[in-house]
Amino acid sequence: MSLDTPAVTPAAPPSPAGAPGTDLLDALTAVFRRVLELAEVPPDGNFFLLGGDSLVATRVLSAVARTYGVELTFEDFLADPTPAGLADRVATATTAATATATAVATAVR
Figure 1 (spheres, rainbow, N blue to C red):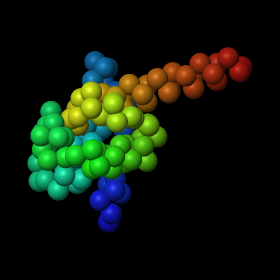
Figure 2: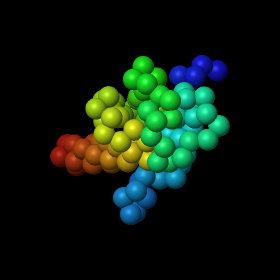
Figure 3: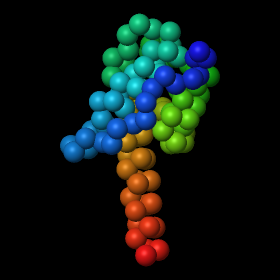
Figure 4: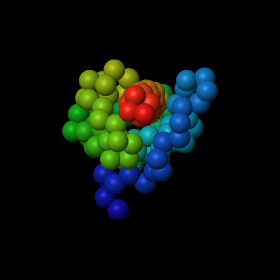
């Protein structure tokens, strides 16, 4: 298996409290572990302090785009380069996309 190939399942919807679902956080933590080649990565583990660089960060962003259909920018990644931070951004983007699709579907009726 390629390091770029995500071995994760699609994201669960955000929890009622607005925090990302555990499945999403676990999946992004697994992506960090895989690309950084580490046995453990905490949810608040800073990608760059754990040995990542901008080139490897693009692999994380590619995995997010392929798995969740969310195109995060490098600036998004820099804002909070942790599994929890990316999970928040993916959950927010997924919720926004769902709300937009619902609004469009309702308007078409």
